[in-house]
Image (cartoon, rainbow, N blue to C red):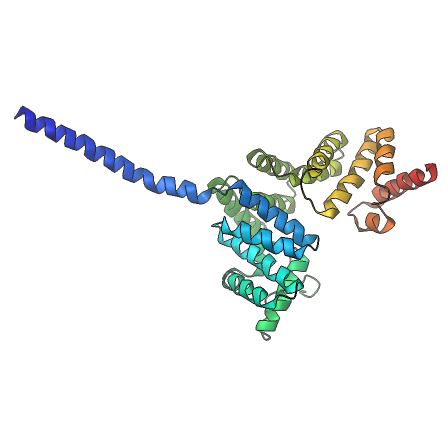
Length: 308
């Protein structure tokens, strides 16, 4: 009787351990599915930058590597759009068509706006779409669409909730952080926008554009000391990582102005001397500067030229 009871106890213990092991499998698999390897995130960021800088061959190669590592359907579709556009610019129409159809199903079920692409990429993809489906209009630019209105508070709240859930599920999803940052800007909540970027960089130490965006927020809030700190950090890391040319020029311009308004005019003049050739009249005009800031920057650059 005692031996039978001992065997029964052992059987119960083994059964309990097996049960606990089986329970742990879904959570383990879930964790494996939600985490995105930093390598694939880096490939994605560099692919976007390469596309925006016109390096289409590099963009296609990096994006193909990137989407291999993502399970998120939105990111995979967005990557497929970039690859499709890159092959189109390279006149590689067979590959263009292949990745067009990879993105097509997602765009049909969610619409092109859900991909949060830059305006020129949306227009380019809509043009390719029109070649395959001449009678379908999937996107109109804001200038074409008179009915375009800002999102309602309820729509922003839904977007915010969706993105917060995505970040909770995948804490290193850089794109979700940037999308949430944009939602907070639309809500005029710069404090939460800044905290979103800080959280993103904490969970993604290799991401550097956040420093640029925080620098912009601080500059517009006239917090020039903090703006200097973030623009300097961005430029320090940009020396070792690929960044969009427009961000590099923007960081130089805003750092010169931040030095100047902080009272450190010697540093402003020194940096202006170093980057004067890059900050041409056309570049300064293209920057999103207030009229006063644009005039101050032009004066500093002009004084640099006279001094030389």
